[in-house]
Each structure stands twice: as structure tokens, then as C-alpha cells.
Length: 399
Image (cartoon, rainbow, N blue to C red; front, side, top):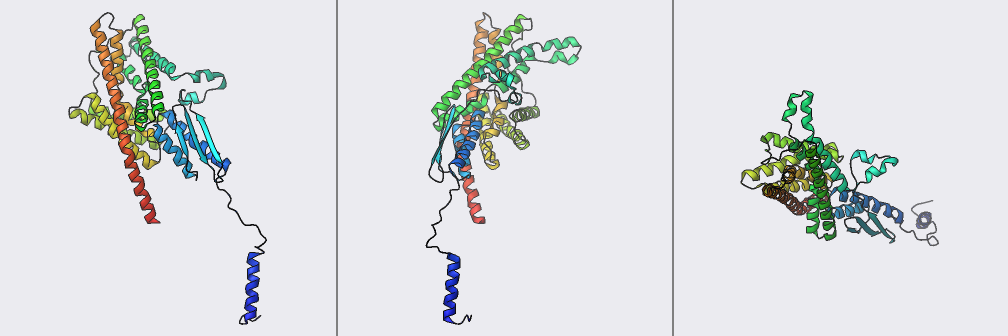
């Protein structure tokens, strides 16, 4: 066939057209297959909601939980997504690619211990894992106080250094971990962001858990007094020690909390570094003449601002590392000193008033920590938004 012949060219073109189209007139039109069908959309929403539940139980603000759920769903192509977060439930609603509505409701059950040992509870011992937080806090405070009160018995073993052990320091260090410092921050942040129901629920949780710790400590102190191991109330606040040891102690607390929460090595190292920053802010504010409450708020502010920026870079919730900036400044020693003074006051109104004043000062420090951390998170959110915009602009330029 001569390609220069017009008839040959027309026949060749007709043959190619019929080969490519293959009777397209009679064939049905192709339709786009939905990438995110209803079943897959349900699984995506459940994944996002489970992640948000974990954050909410850990104490993250409701606004951050909402943003995380929306971002996870958007990463899988599910957007827009409506999310409603309350104190004990999360509702997420969206639509699949074919327009089918998908809604998930998850009840948040956070009133359980989160230690690794309780995660491995056997079926026959489930009842020990279902204690509410006030009961667990009361039991922890009671055992801690009683064991600390019995430490002078170590001197009978012939250990020379047992005489220098101060039971009040042991109890104060335990209170730091039992008091709900992060719950205060979460409640304050929820109130600022407009999540009133979640804020009220967390405040009630804070009150009940604190009351549980207080009752446990009071029972332990009273039993120790009956057994003849009463602890004398300290007349003044416990000294902090050398500056280097202060930073070391803050880092140890941060690392212990990170390990307790099951964090990885990277989060542990960052938590220790963030505790240095927060404690440096506390020390600097104290050197400038700020009182303990104001200095604690300044340290919490610096730690939370830097923590939310680092969390943005690491793509992790800020609560995972912000807690390291809060716990070293929780007034555990002041709380125990006030409670011990009240227990040992008897009929002396002066000691009773002194104990109440000490507890009020400890509460002031706790509120200052919440305000400082909340302010840092509030100001850090626009900063992370700016960084996110810069990152996207750089990505567009590279493309």
C-alpha cells in the first residue's frame, strides 16, 4: 500500500480510528471509581477519633484534639470533617467520595490507670484496673505517706546514712507526680478556646483527684502518728539546693514522666531539654524579684511556647512534650507542708491558719502554671501557623 496515495491514507486512518475506539458509540461511558468509599471512610474516621481519644485522655486541649482529628482525616482525603469534642465523647461526621454520610461516636473512658502494668491486666484481675482516679490518688497518697513515715526504721539496720533521710522530701516528691498539673493546663486552655463543657469536666476531675490525694495523705499522716512515727511539720519551705542540681532534678522529673507515659527516645531527650528551658525561665524570673507563683508562670510560658513549636516540627501533639515543662514546677512540697501543718495543728489556731495559708499559696502556684502554659499555647498557635505557611511556600517553590 502506497502511503502517498490519498485513498490509502484515508483507509489507514479509518483502520487506526476503529482500532483505538473499538465501537465507542455502543460502549458505555466510563465512570470514576470512588477512591474513598463508605467503608474506607468509616475506617479513616475511626482511626482519627481513636487518636483524638488518646490525646484527650492524656490531657491535651480540646482544640488541639479537634485539629489533629481533622488533619488525620484530610491526610487520607476525607474533608471536610465536622468534629465535636466534649469531656467524655468525640463525634466526627463527614461524607465519603460517593456522598454517603459517615458519622462516628466514641465514648472517652479515661478514668483508668495508664501504667504499663495495668495495660497487661489479666481477665481475672480486671477489677483492679477499674479504679477511678480519686480512689487511685487516695491509695497512692496513703501508701506514699505511710512508707515515708516508716523510713526512720532503716536506722535500726545499722545503715549510717539512714538518719539523714527526710520523710517530708519523699512525700513531696511523690506529690509532684500525683497532682494533676496537666489537667489544670488543659482546663484553662479549653475555657479560653470556648470548650466550656470540657473545661468544667476537667475542673471537676482536677478537684476530685486533688481531694483524693489530700485524703490519702491525711490518712497516712494520722496512721503514722498513731503508730508513733509522726513527722514534724517543717517551719519553712524546703531549699532547692545548688543551681546545677536544680536543673538535673528538673531533667530527671521530665525523663521519668516521659518514660512513664511510654514515650520514645526522641521525645525523652526533647522533654529533658524542654525542662531546662522552663526551669531557666523560673530561675531568671526569680532572680529578677518575681515571687514563686509569677516565676512559675514565666517558666511554664517559655516551656509551652517552645514546646508547641517543637511539636509542630516533630509532627507530634504538643501535650507529649509540654508536660515536661510543667511538672518540675508543681508545688508538691508546699502542698505537703500545708497538709502536715494542718494535721499537727491540733487545737492551735495559729498552726491551722499557717497550714491554710501554705495551701492557698500552693494553689496560687498551680493557677499560675495553668495561666502561663495556656498563654504560651495560645500565642504559639499563630506562630506554628506562620511556620506552616512558610513550609508550604518553600515546598511550592521547590516544585
